[in-house]
Length: 290
Image (cartoon, rainbow, N blue to C red; front, top):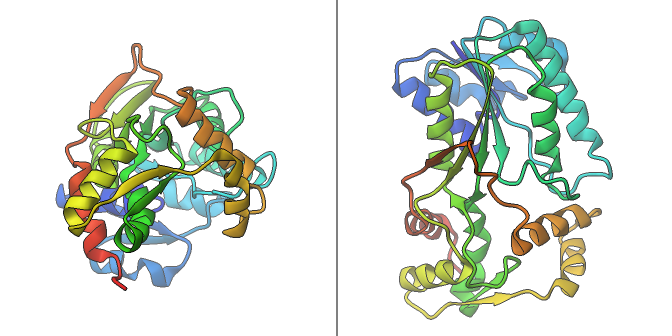
């Protein structure tokens, strides 16, 4: 049996489907039983647990051959990441008590970076969980291609792709959530000892200019990537409702300056198969037209 957190999201949903396709038994861990009905209909067992409830997580993880851990995304965290720390402590305690056969934890490119930034939350999780005496794999994924969903409307309406990633010709490692979930499901069914770090990107790095070109082809109109000046970032993020925009800005600095990158060296590297063009095709098809 495989216990999956975040199964109602994009990555966790792929993990669940891939395991079911392989004939495995899946335990869907959800915060709200109503949101888990779809997975019950697919044949999953259901456990209701919030990610900071040690006892509920212990029950959800107990007896599992593998556990998939996904730290809920927090794009506007309070200083010091108190919410992430609370969840990490709870997950660690639950894993220590339940002792599943193995754990796959979704991490990120740049988790090893010491500089302050939004992704430090995942670095903290790696540091905490790696001390457990369990087979542990951290899947460090590149920038999600699906972040381009925010590019569809301005590209369609104005022919522009406002970009925080810059210079816009610079390509960075990106990956589709389909490949992330597929890789995580495969790792859960592997056997190893100790700690593994697996770095995952798509078929090739992607630049904002390349996204603009692909969108132009899909939309049938010219699209141009435009760098958003950094001195406008804080005001833009605050207008979107963010109270603590600095960590997000630091993360973007890390990508733009190159210190958020894959660690490389002796770490495992894997590549997905889903292209940015395929992801954009799906995003455009699902995006409401005006």
